[in-house]
Image 1 (cartoon, one colour):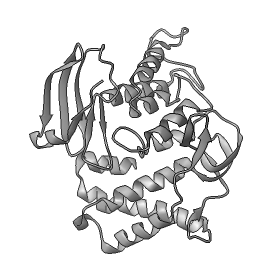
Image 2 (cartoon, rainbow, N blue to C red; image 1 turned 180 degrees about the horizontal axis):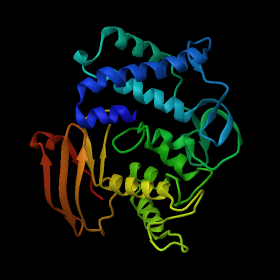
Image 3 (cartoon, one colour; image 1 turned 30 degrees about the vertical axis):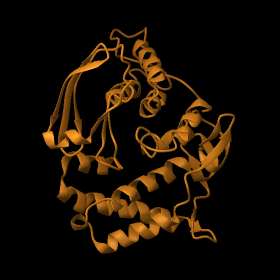
Length: 285
């Protein structure tokens, strides 16, 4: 999935053909060969785990969302970049993938860690991997309530370390929650260290690079999100209107977006190349 992101940003066709497609096909073959199919021809991913948290699963969300994501993106590649054989293989495998798992919550249906899951031993929220990194749910996509309900009823919460809550909130357009988590994360530091950016130890150690990585990703995603399944670029999808901001960020297809927002209004915006401007969707807050 990250390799496909690299292709979207660089347009490196040689890398796509020589590295990305062969690796993607090998990843797909592993799942196809390791697991059996049921009577309806769908993969049954069992035994499996959902991250390090749920230890006895069938059809775990991270793997399933990832496979849905990469096959959808591969199928979206233009014909001259792929072979008919590859396209047929991806289509056939796509048909074997079970649906994204859901569960019932007091707020309604929500993304689930797996189709079946039990034996909880850690504090990740694998159900939300369909939001990030695989971005099947989020800004501009349908069924957002399934993802928002999953966030509301997640088993574990926090704004420190490798936890991705802030990123999930940004991709779901939950501006107030993303802001609150981001501020709390920014204030976190190791009181025994000289440098404020030596966050930690949180879950593991000091300095905690994961803490800063999530901070940066959440911060940038509040300003700009590029949909990996379309040409759309969403601007300010989770940015508080009471925060002024100047930015210059990269987007797919060698695009840069520069701008400035003050007092809740965009004062200046530059899209390079200009031909990509129609793909930019400015979301009101």
